[in-house]
Image 1 (tube, rainbow, N blue to C red):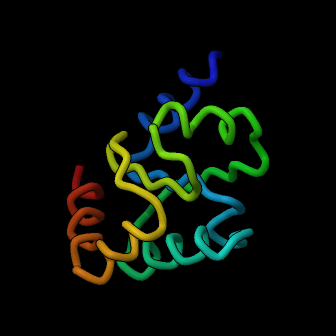
Image 2: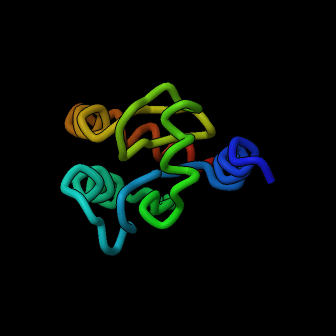
Image 3: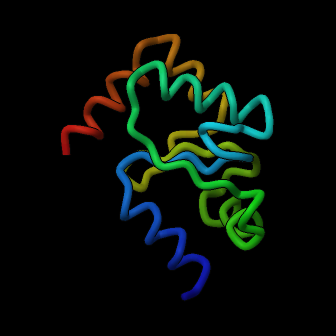
Length: 105
């Protein structure tokens, strides 16, 4: 399967996906840790993809999403943003609403 098709398949299989360094249980960088923690606090049931274990996704996702860094949060296949945006959404209460809406479907 082509790498772009694999990315699309992952995004199509899970309503909330965090492409991150490490796993939600064991993040391997501070940015991934903070984004993952914010999602956990708002009760998100999210799928984590460890880009450190998948060099093809790590190399290709920034081109696919037009976002250069990790983590990258997607909800219903749409890029939400990286760590700073996730934390801003969390602080404003918007992340909880987005997660709630995504988990209804």
